[in-house]
Structure formats: structure tokens, C-alpha cells
Length: 76
Image 1 (cartoon, rainbow, N blue to C red):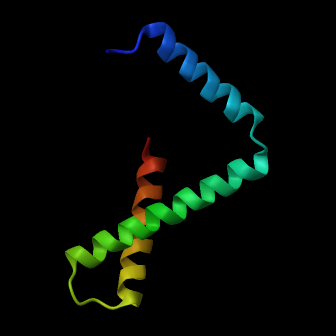
Image 2: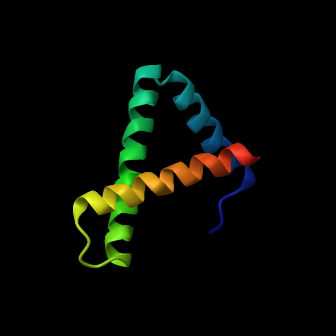
């Protein structure tokens, strides 16, 4: 059974209202946690792409990728 447009809209509306009620401290913490999670996944990918590299090299590549992302954001 497919959800109706009304149900989808109701769920979306509830998510928006819940987000508005969330204290700013929780939103900031969630953002930091999400960034840390993304960095861990990226580091796992770097290790997978570069078998045998040490942790300082993983961190160097991660910093390089983050810097590249920042530069790409500034191009727009």
C-alpha cells in the first residue's frame, strides 16, 4: 500500500515542528556528531583505498579532502 500525499505531508509537517522545538544546543551537537560520523566513514574509505597507510597519512588525506571541499564550495 502506497502512502497518500496527505500522510506524507502530515509526516513532513510533524518533522518540521519537532525540529523547531529542538533546542539549539541539541541541533549544534547533532551537527558535530554528524560531521564526526562522516569523517570516520571517509577515513575508512581512505584506508580501504590505501592499504597499509598509517594513521597520520589517513588524517593528512582527510584534511586535504576537507580543504578541497571548502574550495569547491567557495567557487559557486
